[in-house]
Length: 436
Image (cartoon, rainbow, N blue to C red; front, side, top):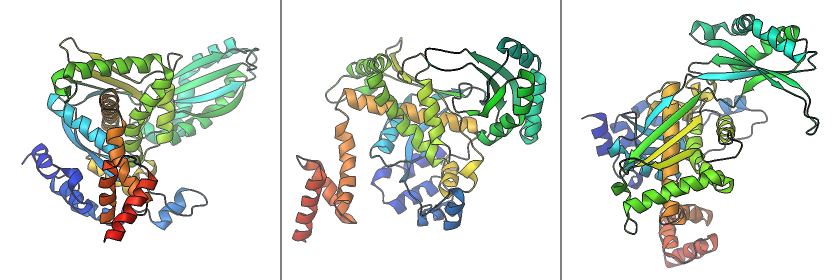
């Protein structure tokens, strides 16, 4: 049985299975090893020793639900994508979109060369124009000094290879002084590269100060990774978008209009992009990467035109298909950091087949595009609350004190009630317990 057939067989109706049945299904489908499946018996719990070594003043661990989004076909490969998130409906929405697009080729991706940028920020430069010339002439020397500070990345085929200079003039009105900022471009290979780049930048500070005559304010990486971009595209016939209340063409056109609204209105764009990040952050967290860095860079990229805009573009293809595209900076790593020791991160990478950093970028950007599609489609058809609140009812049941089988009983009654809130959940739970 091929992997896709096995997944279809064992992972069908996945959401209806119990937790133990889901884990067993992942093992039988070949996505997860039996040995790794044992890690779920303690909910991927960090050991006290590891947790205490990760941060200062550690008191306990703070967990998020860890699940998988199914049905993803990315560059002709099938994936069960790990997601760590507390918000209801996100995993379901990603899985639903992936299932809808899979028969039409799923998601196609492209990534740029994985290059990160480090900065040395200089002040008090006697003559900026002269400093720029001297630094440009010394490019090879600066690059060599940077690579000497981290020779292991060079031996593996990476390292620094280019510099650029950004002269920012004094702005009296804004009250800001003159800066000269040196950018160092570094190929970080499979690592996100923060430690590599920070080591390099601090190492070249004395040389850069001597050459420029200025003083270094700092040397550090930039999380605005404009040289490390990932793009996902997808397309689907409009006929596949039809609902009981809307024709496929109507749904397509409304999705396109919603995309345009998020381009021109920053108030809409923020919420639009937050939906994209629901999917992206969940995978980034699950795989042990730095979601703060990713979010900061992605939102900066959304503002690159001078106005905060939609990150995705949905359009009508020449043949009438709905066509989607998402491009974002994705400086993630497949090695390093907590990836090598965090039990959840290790399992996440195994679920994905231990992907390279390039492949992980492709997976993450595809999930973001899928998430955005599901959110927009819901908004322009039935509204976002129908599906979201149906799943939110379980959280309300738990907050009301429901346990075990009570959770689903209270949740189902909440879905049928006029007012879905905590007070109603408590009333339903109390009534159920009195009837027992």
